[in-house]
Figure 1: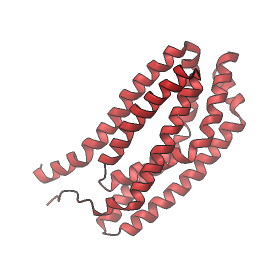
Figure 2 (figure 1 turned 135 degrees about the vertical axis):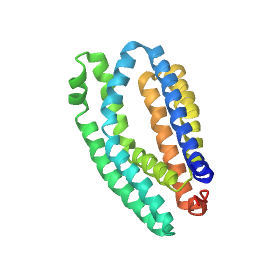
Figure 3 (figure 1 turned 30 degrees about the horizontal axis):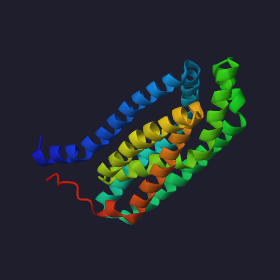
Figure 4 (figure 1 turned 90 degrees about the horizontal axis):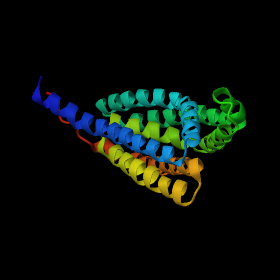
Amino acid sequence: MNKKILTSILYVGIPAGIEKLIMRIGQLLYNGMIISIGMSAYVAHSVAGTIESYAYIPAMGFGLAVATLVGTSLGERNPKKAMHLTHISYVISVVCMSIIGIVFYVFAPQLAALFTSTAEVQHMVIDVLRLIAFFQPFSALVQIITNALQGAGDTKFPMYTTLVGIWGIRLGIGYILAIYANLGLVGVWSAYALDITLRGIVLFIRFYRGKWKTIKVIATS
């Protein structure tokens, strides 16, 4: 394999891979923190997380598409097109995920009842689902902009935001809210919501400042 091609792959791929590793290790510790609250909280967390995972499907699909489209547009030396396609993808994702958020809020009791008959767990799941409903647009923002930046070759910045978000906010602030403020599972998910919201805003600012338009991925020739 051409050395420059390999270097290009590593330049883009390693930070993106590290971002996923940071997230997975953080989630492992995150789950350990929830278990320390109590097994009912962990069960409720697992149920709410399973339900929430369906909300990510539209954003994940559009995110993968936008990464390809941004890379192609920059290959055509048309950053304006890349930004336009990202904007369209975000709007569609927000609409889809906001609808899902409304479903979460309105039908939270019914959704919780599908997974558990334990009243204590149901109440916690309902509280979490109704909290989740409000930050779906920011979840879409994180997914779309992260993929857009990675498609442009700006893979380090999303890695840094994930590091701060997972380890600083979800684990750090989550521990304070859940344990010290005695908010339990709601405290954990409040920190999660704060992470998604702040990370979405930071990534948005990064994208619209346009530094990704000038990033040079090493030539393949």
